[in-house]
Image: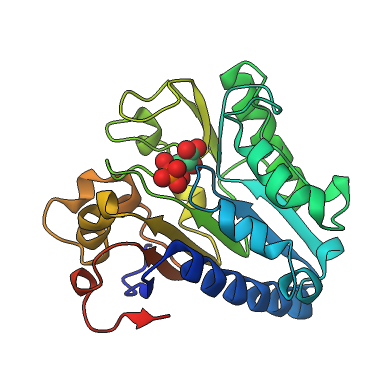
Length: 258
Ligand code: 6PG
C-alpha cells in the first residue's frame, strides 16, 4: 500500500536559509520522537547538499535542543570506499556533525563501505534488523526520519534509473553497481524502495536549478515521472521537499517560503 498524500514543500531562496529551516524542524522532530518513543532513529543522506544542515545541527541553538544520547544514526546509502575516504558519506557526516556532538559511538551505524558490496549489503541488513528486533522475512522497520537527496537524473540514495535495485521488494539494503550518470563511479550500498517508503517521515533536501524540473515533475506526479527513482518511493509517512536555489513557481502555491 503506498500513500497518495501530497508532499509538503519548504522553499527558500538559499541553501543556507533552507538548511536552517530543516534544522529547526529536525530538532522538533527528534524531540517528539524521544518524548513518545524514547529514541530518535535517523537515516542520513549522502552527497553535498546536507553538509550545511549537519554543521548547523552541531551548533547552537540545535546542539542543545537535541538529546544526542537518544539519537541513533544510520545511512540511506554509501559509496563502497573505506570510511575515511574523501568520497565516504560517513566521513562527511562524521566531520560536519558526529564528531561535534555528544552521541555515543554505539549509536552510530555506518554502512560497511570497505566490505565487498554484496557482503556489505547483507551485513547492514543484519545490523538494521538486529537494531529493530526484526526477524528475517518481510518485516520492515520504520525509521523516524529519513533524509534523502536528489540527482539531476532523478536518483535518490543510490537508486539510479534502470537499476535492478529498483525491483527489490523484500530486502532492506542492496548493493548497486557503479553509476554512469554521477560521480563517484564506485559501487554503492543503498536502502531499498521498500524500506525507504516506510519511513515515519521522509525529507528530500534539494538545492540548485539543475534539479528543479525533475523535482517539480516528481512532486506533481507528472506523466512519465515514474522513470525517476525518487518518484518510486511514494512515502507512506509525512514527506517534505526542502527546496532552495531554484524557481519557486514550479511547485504550486502551497509552497511554504522561508
Ligand atoms: C550520494 C547520495 C546521492 C545524493 C545525490 C545529490 O551518495 O551521492 O546519497 O543520492 O544525495 O546525488 O547529491 P548532491 O547533494 O551532492 O547534489
